[in-house]
Length: 252
Image (cartoon, rainbow, N blue to C red; front, side, top):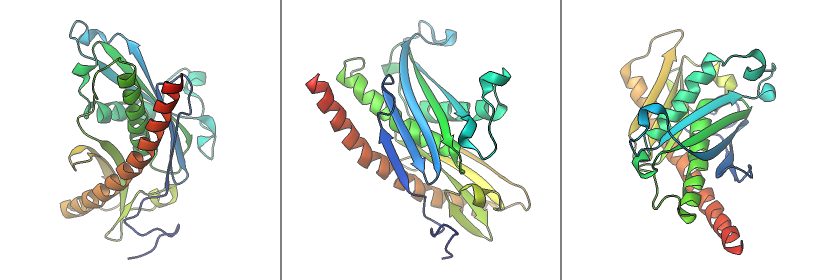
C-alpha cells in the first residue's frame, strides 16, 4: 500500500482525541479532534417541540453547525455579523440532525427538544463527519446524565453512529481525507453509518472523471472500517468519562 504525505496507510484514519465536559452548562459536551480538525459539540435539552409534534408525546432533535472565524486560513465571517446563515452551514446542520435522529427513539423523550451545537474550531477536512461523530459522543454523555437524574428511564439510542470521509484517487480509496488530500482526489464521499454497518446517508461527487459503482462499494467498505475505529475510540473514552461524571454526581 502507498503511504500518504502524513505517513498514514490508505485505510487509516487520523489520530482521534476526545475531551469530555468542555462546557459547564451543557448536559453533554466534547471537543472532538481528528488530526487537525477540531469540533466543539454540545447538547442541551429544553421543554417543548416544533408545532408539527405538539400533543404527539414525541421529542425532537435539531442541530446547528458553524465555522468559527479562525477555523480557516482565511477568516470566516460570523453568520450573525452578516445577518444571514451560510447555505453550507444550513446543509450540514440538517445532515447532523438527520444522522442523529436516525438512531434515536424520540418517543421515549416526551415533548422535549434536544439541541445539538457543533462549532468548528479548526478545519482541516472532514468537518461535517467529525461533527456527526463528536455530536454522537456528546449526546451519549447527555443521555447518560438524563438517566441518572431521572429525566428519562432508559437510553434513547437504537444504534451507534459515526461518519467518515473517503477520497478516490488513482483507483485507490483514501480513508478520512484531510484538506490537502481533499483538493486533489478524483472523488470525495462522506459516509454516515451505524455500528452494524447500515447506511444512514452517503454524500459524494466527482469533479473530473465519473467512477463506477464498484469503486463506490470499495469506498463503502473502507468507510465501515473507519466507522468501527471511530466507535471504538468513542466507547473507550466514553466509559471513562461516564464513570468520572457519576463519581462527581455521587460526591454532590
